[in-house]
Length: 387
Ligand SMILES: NC(=O)c1ccc[n+]([C@@H]2O[C@H](COP(=O)([O-])OP(=O)(O)OC[C@H]3O[C@@H](n4cnc5c(N)ncnc54)[C@H](O)[C@@H]3O)[C@@H](O)[C@H]2O)c1
Ligand SMILES: [Zn+2]
Image 1 (spheres, rainbow, N blue to C red):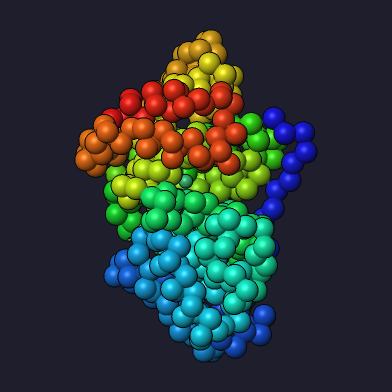
Image 2: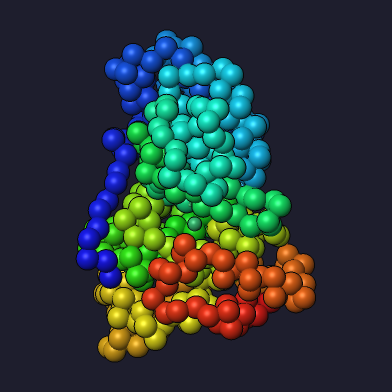
């Protein structure tokens, strides 16, 4: 565990009923003249863009929309969006979308300069300086990107995804409006919800875990374990969906103060080479990595049990029983939500195993957080278990 720790947060977070309305006031108070709105066509197609658009229009300011962004974009696709943004300019960015849109907006907020672009930040992320403030509105629950200092992009020439981390990318304002996730398609709600579960459990069992991150990680794990099924299965379960939105935010805060571990590390090559959605590749690796880590994290998993298992079904007595319950509950959640658990479904050939091990082992930024050391042989066994 770390002995020194800190928690960096957005300037203001607005949550609850009609949270979106706060945008109007933020723009007026900051005397904003021109807004760049970032989104993608999926959000527009789902009719979700109307609410933030109305809130911006109510402030009586000039605005334009940038929406040409694929899901899980490459750094080149993000740079293209930013180049357009640099031509048009703005006093503030309002971004409405999942992790893909929010990460693009976060990068744009530090890249109103010709001195460097996204490509340079892949190698030297620390050079980025904040240029424009950002308001982030998540539509998935979720990556927690609305609160982390990270932006993740694909690097096609290396067939991997890379996380760019810089505190200057932390949002200025966050809007958690449950209307944004009300009609989230089940498949997306499931994968992004399990991503948030991974953030919570990985951060709680990370070498970087500390009292600040633990508070948010444990609470997030509890909320997700007890709400994810209802939030995904029941269209009307607004209470469960709201809890998922808050939990994803808490799990993002936990990332900011702690860090994810081998699940996310080994997942990056699966997104980079085979374009498996981030939440899906994490869901696939969650249980195998937890089994691998169990001997050294069982006390921590027992804390999750104490917090998340409801009194009426609490029968575990030993630490081993408690940690087994947590892992099997996560397994049941992934199975119930019908998230693929085998790379066969993505036509990944066994011949790629060597490449996967090599690419996975390069993710040392996160592997160093794993409480049990991961050797190349361990990574091979974990990948093999999902082949
Ligand atoms: N910055 C971080 O801290 C962080 C953390 C984890 C993941 N990520 C990154 O975030 C990206 C994934 O983000 P994501 O999982 O939120 O999905 P996403 O942003 O890629 O969106 C996936 C698809 O869902 C659609 N969609 C999103 N919300 C919707 C809604 N409410 N209704 C209907 N359709 C909707 C989008 O249009 C898109 O087509 C990946 O690139 C991942 O690496 C970032
Ligand atoms: Zn994630």
